Image (tube, rainbow, N blue to C red):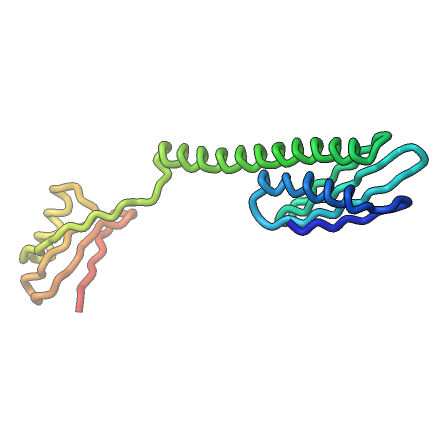
Length: 170
């Protein structure tokens, strides 16, 4: 985690800098991915203010806390950031869970990819008239046959308007 610390109206002592790095560095354990932290410490009259902005892979989390002591302000801002990170992780977890449940419901509802079943078929030698009779008798959508008149594999099918379609292979 890259931590940038700056101070306004106060001196940034090595002790405070180390404390900020330790506290904000602890947040790295709770975060997956690259993170940058911009920390601004300031003093206004008797208020010590800690302002932190975390950038977690494009998500921005901000927190500002103040107290009478700079260490307390850092502790308070750490607690706020910790809660916000947990909230963000829960939100992400719930959205992923919702997406997986939606896929499961689609699968259960029968909206899945069609399965292609391959069958081996040897066409029988028939005339066109015999193929039409077989199509009507067996109530099928189409009949594949070997045309006994020309020796080619053909398909005969029934159209929506009641006519017949005839396909000849080369």
